[in-house]
Image (tube, rainbow, N blue to C red):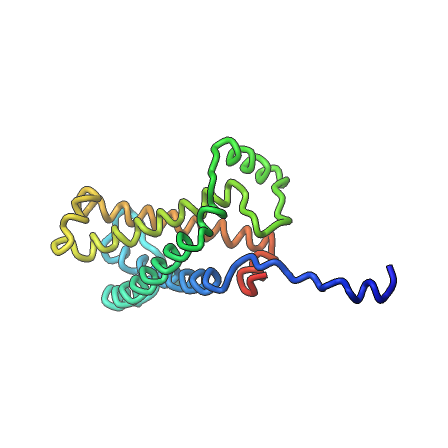
Length: 207
């Protein structure tokens, strides 16, 4: 190939993996969720469900009143930003193209590949079956934790919602286990980012 021919070949542009709206809502959700988890742990310490408390070094708010203020502030950010994310995901067809289909056989195969360190990460534009299951699942968990939070916050005004979850006490347990699922997801998410650093770059630059 001559230098003239090479010069006439158009430069290949990097593939856009995450559009701007995905990146913005992702980072807003991340910050809001961390604030909610830290303040939620402080709220939990004031009214425990199980026989343990969280260390004050990892809680937010300093006391129950302060934690509630942080929690409610982050709740509205998470709820509004989450609705924007879900709405755009449905409107643009991103959820359909990225998260579906989810087939049990493919999930099992990808779990086996991951455990044997043979799961490919070359194409960041495509999610494997495990990623599709986790991302779809965390959206459901996110919706549930917001609804149970509202049921706990306003059990009288929203008594129909509280009743839907089996009452106030049951709603608290569901809220707690949703929080635990989100923390588990975040841990796995961060570990995978450390294993595949270019995925973090893609979420920051989009490419």
